[in-house]
Image (cartoon, rainbow, N blue to C red; front, side):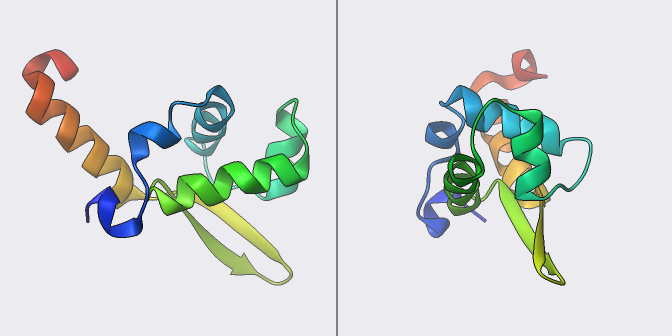
Length: 94
């Protein structure tokens, strides 16, 4: 799955420090918008906008659970970024 198929560039998405912080939070597991907002110095609406961009870039997926959505890293999106870095940078990327 390429990021362009989803309409977003993962490297553009990761160019923002708040989005990188969200990705770093999601490494430890799924979280709701509220949980992410509580951990960062940005509002819930801002978190939602950042998550939408990360999702469009293929880095994040969401799963409905009752009235909430749980956001987590999308394994295939993360693997695509890793594959690109390895292709371009070779062993130096590891």
